[in-house]
Image (cartoon, rainbow over all chains, first blue to last red):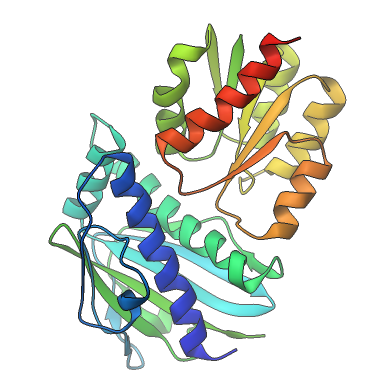
Length: 172
Length: 122
């Protein structure tokens, strides 16, 4: 499977995640995209997708909180969802949480990563095995995670807050 | 009627609780499969919402054991694992339904209402 296909599958998952989030809370629907990826969907709300780009070796990535999923089975690699505190707090408020403490922000970023990776199995099948999410609360360097294949970063914004989806997956 | 919410995410447990609280006389919560098995044995919930990917004992094993302990329990799987094989496996083990994450309150309410209808017809 091509790297492009993996990116497409995870972008679909990202769009679906924010689509459901907004549907739960009755926002109006609009999509803004600087890449062709989002043009497949007109459902996502307040979500702006950037253009995926290839990360250089030993790049420092990540925002305040990063959810990491290790992939095994028919594919191998790692998927990260990284977001700043502000975006995660906005999502927590959308969930109806009154408390915005770090424990919940860590839980949320792990749950988002788990949801995107789990949803990828719709396209990639049950042999696309995913780990329980690990949460990192600091910037991280790609060399520390043995990302020995191409690693793509998709920047996105939700309600004006920036975040990153990082995909480093290949066929096993 | 008793509900047990099983998910390793506190946010998801809270979301399910907020959505369904008014429909049940008692709600208990477990954050992994082993807690769910222990709680199902002690509390005998009528309805269970069950995540699959959890530490220690996962949801699949928990479904198997809960169905062995209390086969009358209605289990609604709520999981991000969106492939057909996982859904079929959960249903084969005795789960009543499968709701894929992410889900809206409306989707969750609708799935639970169907289960409540069955419970009320007993």
